Length: 536
Image (cartoon, rainbow, N blue to C red; front, side, top):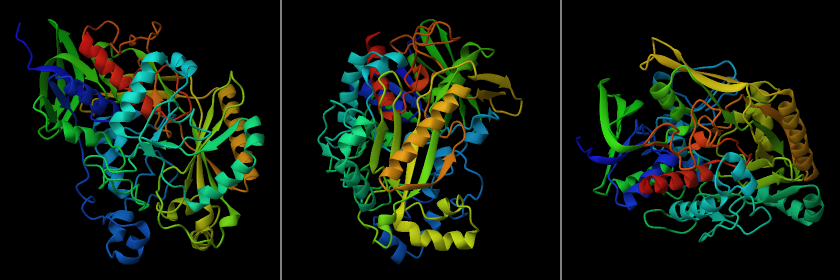
């Protein structure tokens, strides 16, 4: 039997793939990472390393990256998944419609074939889950606590020691202090703190989010600047992006990164794993072999590959956090000067946690400025001209509160492969997703509670925007850990049941999704899967 050149093939350069590859390479394993790996070559060199206000006043080419050279940053349609991406970030979804065929009337996912995956546009929020939540997900709390710390050390997380610390970073240690809060959000927080005992008795906890960014220089990464350009550029590498790890690994002799490689399926043979992929440059079908394969293409992407490889006629479950958001105004900010030195990242984190047997409701609060007013104007019940005038006056008062809810698998949430001769893989993914009456009631009641809380702080929701299913971009449960009732599942090591050497390191294994942000836990799970694969 011919010995493969690679100990591991890893598929995907997103948050899970980057952490897996880093863990394996650091341990001395020979790793070959396959990725389509699209990058932004249009805008990244156009954006000055300056603050938003300076650019608005001084840069004559600002329209190119704020609106897009083809005005692709100005969608004037109904709310859709991905519409929040700015022109410099739209490469994140490039080629998805060409290579990842999906059909659904009830679910609109966002997927990525980018260098760094969806992590290249991640909002950076970090949350640890409590033991009871981890158990419901199929994860081991003790092992996850160790993994959370390892990932925090790797990516750098900035956090405060405040009322929401149990929901953000918990007992995880970090060297980075949270960034400053802008004036709009500081006013809200001050109002909350004056009556915090009352709010806590009602189950409301407010503070600063933990974010995956460094607030002091670390190696090639520079401290987070208060430029308010976080949705447009990562030129200082302050914010953690998965490609930062991949860039580092490219310097290692035992790591090989291969782009333009779209993985379609795998097979096990004689103790080896053969991985089939499409060369997206030449459209040739190719193969590579390794001792072990680790899939890290996201809950939906990994499900595609597994179904194509092991059983196309099977149906798999899926979970996704329901998501709504409120456009809000804080009248006390009328006429006040907007702070120029600020970040565009989440300013405040709010958790509603009153009943021990009920799921936490999570809200992130952003001050609205650098995304430009047209994105909100189209949601206003006015014509364009009047909306522009109104929002110019209201600009300093604006906040956006996004609200996430937990999700459980049901018989009304599933996906499966169906034939499609027009697809490069001759198939497409069909997704069905609907919420029960009871689930919809939880969302309505929870949204009302969050809206009432905001009003009590004199922050008034103007409109609630109901996003389509899939808009949260938090997916899981397609290959549930330890669920023998599912067509395909994972064991506690991330190994696909029935295989010898094929692991899944993304959120496909999570049987349940808490409302809190998912990304930090995905990376912690990826760290555990990589270590288990090394030991096996």
